[in-house]
Length: 95
Image (cartoon, rainbow, N blue to C red; front, side, top):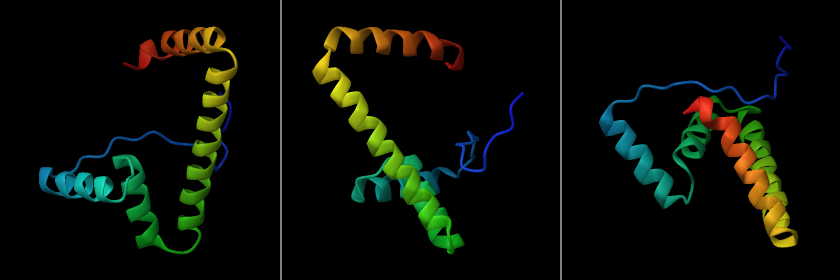
């Protein structure tokens, strides 16, 4: 198995008390962020240092990826539909 680079995304489960989850969800909505982005932002604020830069770089990369996807949809909707179908097939095991 290949080693992960330090900037790879790691998936993890997090247990939160219901009240904290509600607070984070409300904060995410106010800040126009996903719950995941809100948690990352809060953690980065607490850690300080380069943590904020790491989170911001991830957000920039996500925006770039979304831009590429949207451009593909505009340029060739049929090819984009096939790519989405292939992606869905690849993620069925994760559900």
